[in-house]
Image (cartoon, rainbow, N blue to C red; front, side, top):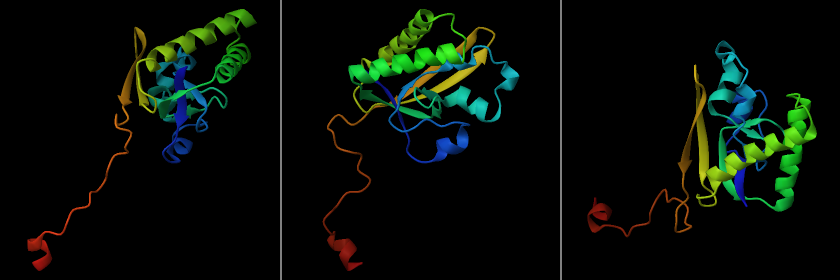
Length: 165
């Protein structure tokens, strides 16, 4: 199954978010964390988490970028268990079944994002809040189709004009 994982290109998430996700942990949108937050509370690190952060399911920290990866059935099951328990412990889910249903809804959303994307596709998110609720826009950076990393230089033969200059 394809799903998102937290990816870190540098240490900036440690400075941007109160709690940053660990690299390679399974990630979800996590917009639900802000469903009852007043707009004037979305400042500083909380504002950054709202505006641009995916939620790592394990650390429950935030990451700016997530990458499409394969996850095993066991990893997926552990993610559902962790998220279900989080819904009980932090959000007061009425029972284990309701928590598990909510976890599966979050997972289904992410599966939908990933299903038509290549492995190693990078996702970022931009969220806004208005009177109609939270709006999410996802941007993708697709990997090269030929499997070669982006070239930052090329090797050329010496040009006679340049070598005589």
